[in-house]
Image 1 (cartoon, one colour):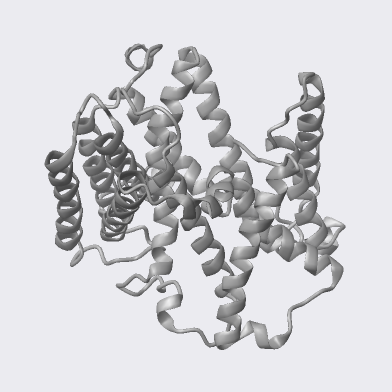
Image 2 (image 1 turned 45 degrees about the horizontal axis):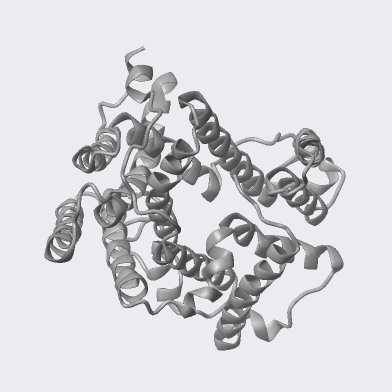
Length: 405
């Protein structure tokens, strides 16, 4: 009861600047562009090590290993705006939790389905990998598309058809040797974002958007990860406690983005000029110093979601966003952001679109020339492909296809 009373909010939590923040949209759009590029270039042979993910056993990170945390960071930056927007529209406490829960479940479902596309046993499933995957994406679009019909029942018919399709695809799915059912072998990128998003939303509401409390929770998340790695932690049936260590680490990145939003855009904090500069610089230095102190014990590793990787990644995101903020919101150099706007406002469609194209080509029996799968030509093609995906999203937006969890 205490938790519910503490979370029950019907008024604005933070006094945030109104309207869309171009620098956040640009940061999101650039991150998605780079994400498409690095996902594509991962299949190219003969690329330099700095363009590849660091291996699990290595104590290092490349720019590729910063893409996922950048997305987590942006999720955190968006949470205060999203929650306060819904409260401003009159959402009750329970309606707000319903929205957060629906969004979390959606990310889990999408993550699990996407992970399992890699393990399909076509013979046991009764259809090819490409066909099953494309049907999944069609159903996902039906469920999460933003419809503009005046009669809401039409929208629910499309959503219902998509949900039914997902259930059927989940039932007929077989993986591995043909006996494996659809299951979270791991949560996938979207599923991991879902866990971190859920925890961050709970913390944000629980502490009523207090910047000092959010800073404390970043430390708590890092501390929880460290605690879970100790040999005395429970095993067996209680191992689920330790299994949340990765989610706690990811949540620390989301909370870092949330805190930066409060520094820049919470008008009650009234951070401007030198005060804002010193606050942001202090946060950056704290993240860097903490990562440096933890690194000897907890090596830098995206795959292991180590504290040093989380903190270094968050620090890098602080710098990137601050530079974008100065350029776009302070200097008003913003025309160039129009290219990223469709992807920035429609990240889910942009994220799944390359897979749709890939499985569509597979189903049609179309493949790229061998020269585009190696070396410099392959790298250049991946860059062009990423740009094409952003242009395609823009076209799909005009056709009324826009996904929202």
